[in-house]
Image (cartoon, rainbow, N blue to C red):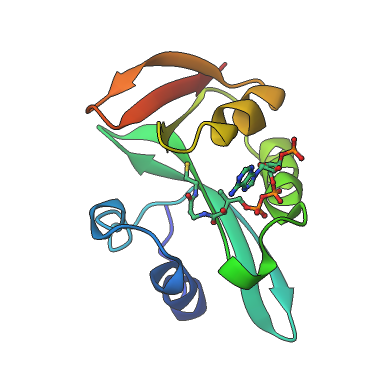
Length: 123
Ligand SMILES: CC(C)(COP(=O)(O)OP(=O)(O)OC[C@H]1O[C@@H](n2cnc3c(N)ncnc32)[C@H](O)[C@@H]1OP(=O)(O)O)[C@@H](O)C(=O)NCCC(=O)NCCS
């Protein structure tokens, strides 16, 4: 288990995530991480954390100005090459395109997760 370095933490806090999605940032958490930089600054980050009752869970975030050009897809591909074994994630029901995005990489919908989210699994 590792902690985020200050640059990674700063990056994650600038991403437009809801406050309720940030609770895990202070937990020593990730087991795998991949990042992409531009001019020395992080523009995308993906990793596997131990959230939700310590199950390995995916997180992925791209700087707003860099979205829509395939960076999340590249990060997810690299991460899945490093991470072997079971992996969970949740996505907001309000963002149905994420279901498509994750199912292309082998994630399957499991159950609704606390109303607004959906829990997925990749074996
Ligand atoms: C979700 C997020 C990581 C996507 O990053 P991105 O670099 O823009 O994603 P990509 O360009 O690689 O696109 C991945 C796929 O999702 C689709 N997509 C991404 N954002 C979309 C949007 N706002 N509306 C519709 N489709 C979208 C793309 O069309 C693409 O589909 P394709 O593979 O069929 O072409 C980014 O929006 C983000 O950081 N959001 C805030 C944090 C977050 O919600 N993380 C996910 C938690 S589950």
